[in-house]
Image 1 (cartoon, rainbow, N blue to C red):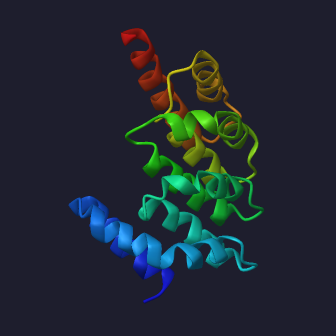
Image 2 (spheres, helix red, strand yellow):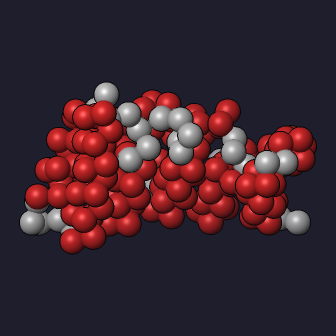
Length: 165
């Protein structure tokens, strides 16, 4: 079994709620996942960053932040997918990376990475500066239509949550 297969198995265990088996699998693959995330091949790094979310490795958020700053768009995208997955139940992971997510959403050269960053912001606390940034992206005609749409939807979601407070 390789890292990608182990991560898929971990995701299945997490979805089933098999915590003990998931913990055992994490222990077994932790070192290999760390090594892959620090590797030279962007495909290995991307698989490792994606695996952090599939393994539900909340302890690896610092490593995941490195993925958000990786030179490869595939790695940044994989790190964003994992961050989104890890932040579904708790906004802490998004809140701690908010400034970096704002930067990715507004200036990343890859449109898919920018859209993913916008989607991840949905799981954070509804902070005013994020809502303003997203509304600005949504109204900017120079932006890609898909990015504008995602920003509009996430801004509306965060605005609703903020109004409920």
